[in-house]
Image (tube, rainbow, N blue to C red):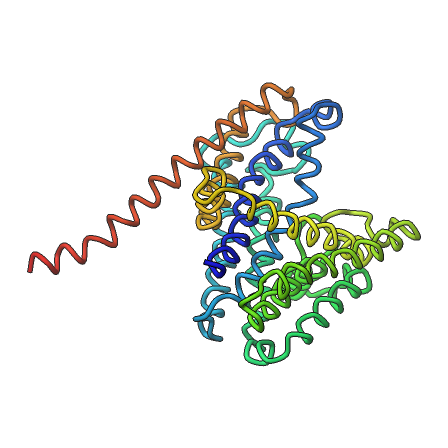
Length: 365
């Protein structure tokens, strides 16, 4: 039972972070500036947006939990995730241009994304986002996987190095287009990449460090996993806050391309929140509906992420960009949620039928 509760706490946090994707992304594309700045929904979603990297910490922890992780298995998974990133870019950016009549004029003016601009279309197809970050991170981890398993403090050191070098290497290019594209995914400082590895991979590595610490003492998750979160989180929050106060532009500046102080401060906040979630989940009754919903979303994280982005951008092709008030934004959030859960139901039902066919054929024979 103790082991089950420990796993439940991680799934609880991941499920919550998955559910919060839709409010954040709907606000980004549909809400007016007035709705963002002067409504309760806008204020709440701004907090949620800052908390989205908690998913990366969860991913690192879950990776350490995986008993069947091998170098070849990690490599295959990494390549699959990277590939899904480009499939998603096609579905949400290019498909609406080709099949849905394109995006509203205001969005085209802001993004330059239209059929008459092939270079811009290619740019959006190649855009670096969460899948590229996760896939490339796993790819790099697979190269030194066996070494990392034996040396958890090397994982922590790598996390800190990536964090502190983030601004030093930010934007470095060599003038070779293909090489520069890879470098942009690693440490780019523009919006051709939303989540470059520097500094965001440090969140994944911090989760991996905590997960490896847990494996050393599975009988006491609070001592081996969640208490270290609170200690590290408090230290990081204080140091990060002091650094941002000293030089905000360098240490924080652009949220998607953070400096060391901003990364450390944000990571500190998220680790403390994670620790709080653990204690909240322990207080909830077993088999309550909230936890069931979060656990379901945790298991569906990859299709959930893809479906919500596709539905949001396909809806944008038939509506307007950044103009809607709070009631309309809430309506869109509800509609996207209903659409995503319907697609998840159909997706899982189709997979179940497909997997059951060989068994039925074998039984018939």
